[in-house]
Image (cartoon, rainbow, N blue to C red; front, side):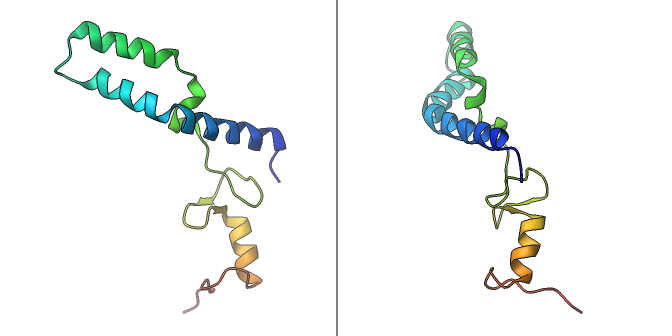
Length: 101
């Protein structure tokens, strides 16, 4: 089990990403727009830098839904390899079978 504080911090980041997503997208588009003047692009970059750091999508860490483990994460199942193996071997994941050849 991961530390509760680490899981909560990640959940806070997810909420911030959702809150600032539209504003961040508009500012990024303005900063990259070649039709705007250099000063307008620079102003957009300055406004973008004033937003909270944790509102950036790249700061969110994929964590297991079951245990909160940050490593060995399978996106398809939204869980870590350890939890995936445990639940699959006990038959709690439909359609997942152990490979054999």
